[in-house]
Image 1 (cartoon, rainbow, N blue to C red):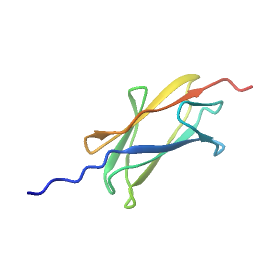
Image 2: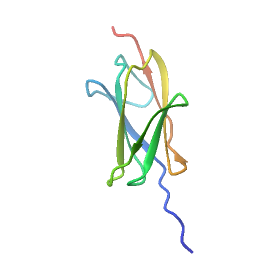
Image 3: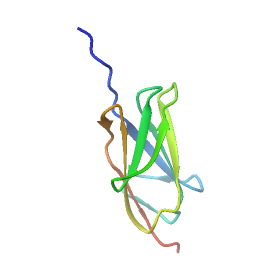
Length: 99
């Protein structure tokens, strides 16, 4: 019996537009971020922010993907990736007003 290989996507990290790492549940004053993750190689991945689709892309042959998400509003953002019928854990950040 054979079974299909499934690999749930993982959001590995989020970086601000200046390259600063934003930890899970962390804060940033930048409204543009890059979301990096992994999933089954050569597949498709969808990225959601607060349950709204923000992008669809291709996972490369090494199983890596990333999205640039621009113009985030101030407040809480919960990112979730979906690929091959599987979902990642939520990676939450908060965008705050610049100091």
